[in-house]
Length: 146
Image (tube, rainbow, N blue to C red; front, side, top):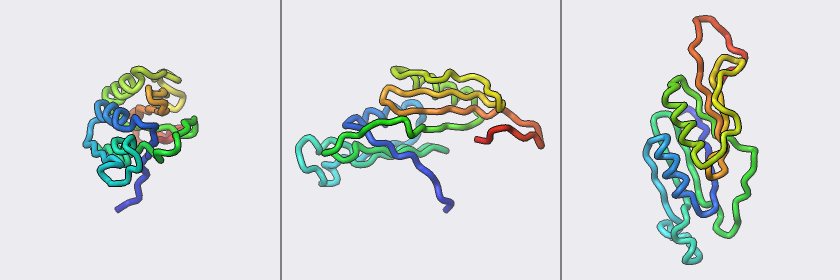
């Protein structure tokens, strides 16, 4: 098996809501386990918190957790989820739906490297980049490779 890179997000008690939101847009199978189910809850409030969630579809994999129950997650600008592909209809739909309730940081539009690209911050504070790869002529080289 080839090594893979899977984004792992941490939330402050709303992992289940966030992962259901992402599943409604990206599709795939979602599994979640609570701290209570894993018998790791130290307080009644921790029982329903998500210890581990995984969303997997044909080409995407995303994992998440409510993190350490005793320590709040601090959100920053250092991580972006990046989705790249050639299916412009599907990727435009992902972009539009992920932006609902959030903020478009850079609208989807054709870029200097030939692809259509945009950035947004969803309603959970997660940053996303969507790159729709333009068809290439045989032997053509792009300025940026996604």
